[in-house]
Amino acid sequence: MTTGSLRLQERLLILLPLACSSLLGEDADRAIRRDLVVKVSLDDAWAAWTTNEGARRFLSDQTRIEPVLGGKYEVLFLPGNPEGLRGCEGCRVHSIIPKKLLRMTWNPPPHLELRGTGLRTLVTLRFTEPRPGEVALHFSQTGFGDGPEWDRVFAYFSRGTWDTLFQRFVVAYGAN
Image (tube, rainbow, N blue to C red):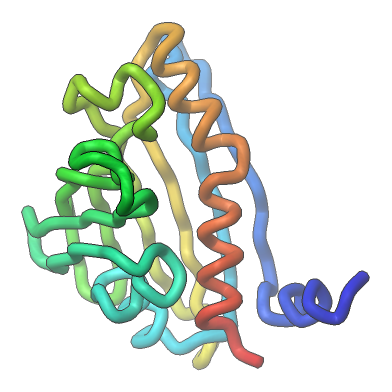
């Protein structure tokens, strides 16, 4: 193991890649779930996900985050692309309880057909503090519909997209 990966492991206490497909009837019950514990203050973890300054440290250099009910939650992963194809555009804060819950809409990636339909999934982040200076993030992405195109959206996000973002969060915010 390299020194960098050891440091990452030291900062990342628990990362359980639990891509789940709950087949209780239809595929619409599919969910992607992750649980992550990081040595970081609750204030810093909350700011990382709910402020432009915080999100720009690990998500993208270009964000439009308004941490209020109905506020924008846009992350431009591909800022050079045409409008509508730059990443998480047109997404909104669905629910917010300070330092406890952030729920926002999330659209399909730009290269998939569903992108142009306006249909979105729902991303939920729950924040708890198991011990002072340690935050547990409980993540889920739900709302995947049925059919081959939704299968492609689910596969895209299940392949490690969120794992990569969480690793970037740990590198930017995890304790040294």
